[in-house]
Image (cartoon, rainbow, N blue to C red; front, top):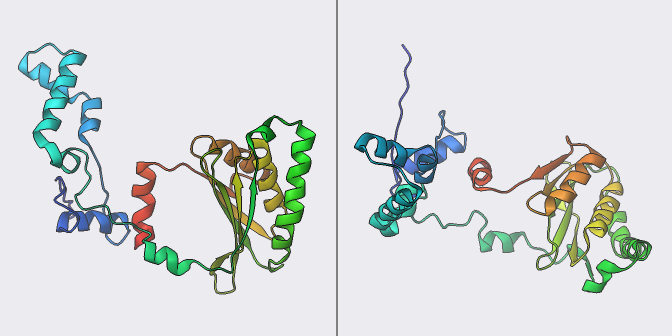
Length: 254
């Protein structure tokens, strides 16, 4: 006869059997499913209203906020672990500095383009012409160095003012290893010219197979127009969230 086991618990740090079991399930090394229910989830589902009903008290938003504050004050420094399902000592990086530095190479070429704020308000034909000049002068020689028969891919991280937009074309070797061909860094570039650069790169990548684009915030625009041009099956619009990290990082780490 079959059966099932349900384990309900809060965390007790990262280095304990309960958290290791969760990691094994998320990494696909053990059958099962993980159901994560935080204190805030319970509040949204009516936990305090249910308490008021059982105790014969009138529910008010003010009373609920006060009750929540009291609960969190009671747990103090343990609130994240006991209420938010975040195990202690979980600040370890998936990509350590040592790992990143070991993957760095001075051989990777970078095409950089930065403009002043006034560029955004120039006539469209001038912006397009300057953008095309950058693409032809800085990017085309890098594209020319790609193996013509290799499959290619693209990763993108979006930025507009304080952060850079970075394009990372990759090509696949015979052993299925993927190498970064070069990088394109765009600083303070208007949305339309970012689109122009993105299309220029992808249009000229040999045997383009697909890309993953940052679709958070304003980055959603570039991800959307890329999916419209190259197909939703080839362009993944990635929206980073807590749930995304929970779903994707454990298998990546394993």
